[in-house]
Length: 235
Image (cartoon, rainbow, N blue to C red):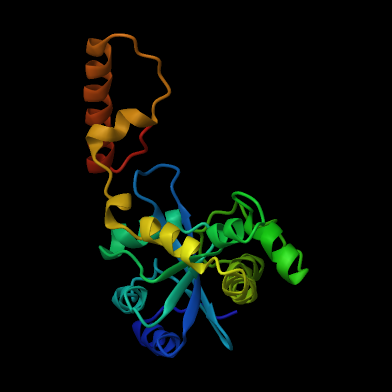
C-alpha cells in the first residue's frame, strides 16, 4: 500500500480532495512522553479516492493539507474529532471548518453517547474491523501492510457512516442540533485553554479559599512548564 512521502505526491492527492464535497480524516499519533502529540500518519478518503500521508517524512510540508482543512467548500468528517483537531490547531494554527463529527451525529441520531467507531461501523455497514493494530508504535518506519490497512479502514468506512448519518439528520430534522455542537467543537477557544483554568481538571475537595488559591497557582505553573518543555502534565 502506497504512502505519500513527497511534496509532489501530497499536492497531487490534495488537489483531488479539494474537488470533493467532503473528505473523511483521521490521524495516528503518539503522546506518551510529550505534552504536544507527535503526528505520525494522516489518513484521508472521499468517494473513489484514498490517501495515506507520512508527516514524519523530511520531504513533506503539510501546508496543502492545512489549506484543505480550512477550505469552506469541503466538509471535514471525523469520528471523535477533538484530538485530531487539537493536532491540526497546534501544527497548522487553524481550526478545520466545516466539520462533521460522526460520534456526535450518532448521538443526535439515537445511537447512544460516545459510540465507538468500531460499533458505529458495524451498526451502519455490518463490517467488523480488525482492532489488532490499535496499540501500535506509529513512529516506526516502515509501517507494515497490516498497520496501513488498519489505518485506512478508519476513513474508508467513515464515508458510508457519514452518508448514512447526514441523511438521517435531514430525515429527522435534527441537522440544526448537530450544527450547534459543531460550533462549539470548532471554536478556537476550545483549543486555547488558559493555564489559569488547569486546576479545574483536578478532582480535589477544597474547603478554604487560601487552599484553592494555592492549588490554582501550582496547577497553572505546572501547565505552563509542561507546555514550554513539551512534557506530559504528569511529568
